[in-house]
Length: 300
Image 1 (cartoon, rainbow, N blue to C red):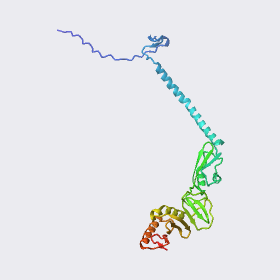
Image 2 (image 1 turned 180 degrees about the vertical axis):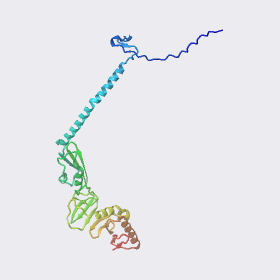
Image 3 (image 1 turned 180 degrees about the horizontal axis):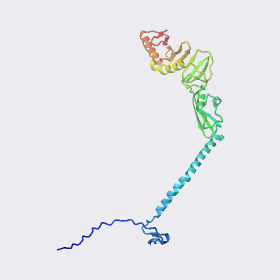
Image 4 (image 1 turned 135 degrees about the vertical axis):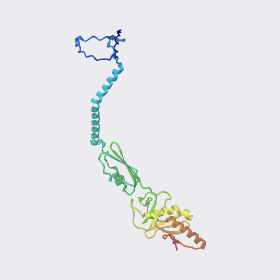
């Protein structure tokens, strides 16, 4: 017996998306797209098109505007600033307003302003390029000047401040007493400090302001007057100077010592004190002690 079987149904494959190419319709035949009305007005927007917000429009406009400014105006602004700077520099370089037109001097006592101004060579020079250090070096060479400072005072003034040497004591020579500073420079005849040291020299020539006496004698006298009371319990009443023997000191108790130059003053005074103790203990009398040779004192 023949049986008839039904044919099995063919298995259906899953549908795949196929791209169908069609001819592009002409503008006149293009279908009208569905549109919807905006909820805030009669403006129509295509369905599915993202609505742009007002802030997005403004930010985009701002970015485009700033880019345009950078591209067009920033180079012009930079050029304008550069031209202004160059112009200002040219004006400052050539204008007579910024040239040295006045010099002020202060702090002088024994030094004349004329001597200072004769050493200044920047009259009429530009304030920017005037050589102040060279002028300071020239003024510092004056014997009575201890230090000098020069500064600009815009627009056209230069200020010179001088500090002169300060009086320390007196130097008497050829019957004339001169005021000197601690380094031995003669400051003229103005009054020395009260109670200061006086050194009497046996030299016979005259001195003038700016001259310098023997520095070692001044240094020795300064150390003697500051240390003798502690070392010997007395003080100096007279200090004399001779080029051949140096400094000689006479004390308030009548002793005289020849100390020579300024080397080893503290040691010489210590030797003098030891000799004075032994002389008192041994009842030895002397008028002068020579301490120029340090640990080999000579009694006279």
